[in-house]
Image 1: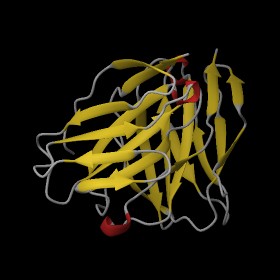
Image 2: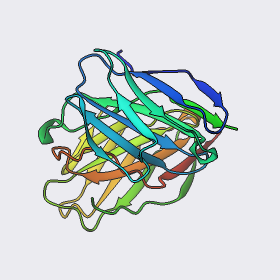
Image 3: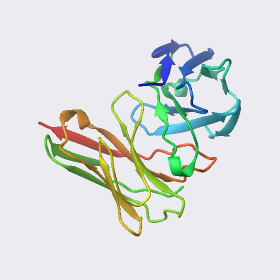
Image 4: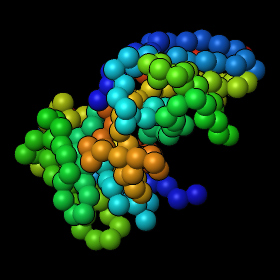
Length: 117
Length: 112
């Protein structure tokens, strides 16, 4: 069964450093997302991406964050200068279609646990 | 996006049927009801989606009354592995704003 993969599974970094979290969405999917979940809290939407551009972003997704689809398979989230409060589990998700009758099932990856020291 | 209300937590035992009810009084005409499941330290996983009446798949059933102001996720004969957080979501899957807004969910604990 196709699945979303993410690397690394765990990233430890120093405050102020740049990190890049990588995701490989399911191959025929067209819509891509990043979410994060701080320990013990809700899953929060960060950004959605379609047709090589950002569709929507949340207040969390400020200038320190960026996303890119550098080739036909990878989808990356970059945090330019990490802060302590960026420590969280980051989930990538993808979906095939956005069509009312077919629903919008999003497939989530296993997550990258980011720890900022 | 319609606001949803669901129990914070529920407990049950192996082999029992579990029903989790979600209230969504402000559901709009084009909104569907979707349930996701999340195990600890894993990403959420889609369980089921419906618009009205009843939907069933290999994992669960979803019951939606005629007024659609609530819905019930039914898990038949639960096992320990069904211990997870269950999220009820309401939104228009055809909307360009396809993000998922997760609430706190229902933390389901299954005991032997």
